[in-house]
Length: 119
Image 1 (cartoon, helix red, strand yellow):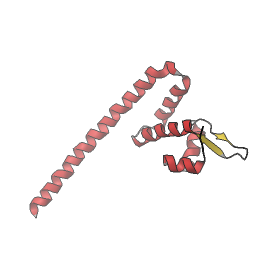
Image 2: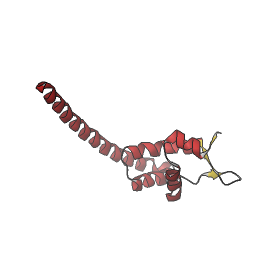
Image 3: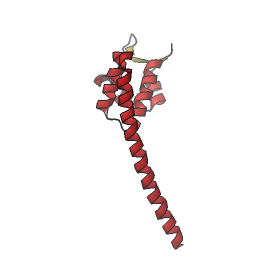
Image 4: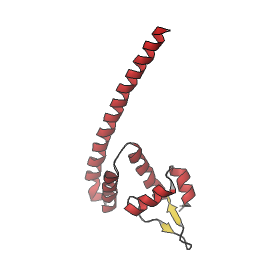
């Protein structure tokens, strides 16, 4: 099993050390193992979980919802239907964001076309 230093996790995930500490403090990231000197040592499982957190964060999921998702995951497989529901609701919100951005992009393209027509 691979073990990662905080610096490696920062590089791998793009999260800052402060963010990693915060996520651990609020329970979004389970308590990270430490070596004899008290330095955090992250597992491959931690890295995988942080990848999921990154995806949820980057798509605009509020921390409260991420915490709820983490709680469901830790509660066991009987929560899979609830996890699916939570992720489907988030997916619906993401789809709305994508549609909104596509509409804005069409507006920008129209403006570019207009300006080009003036040249």
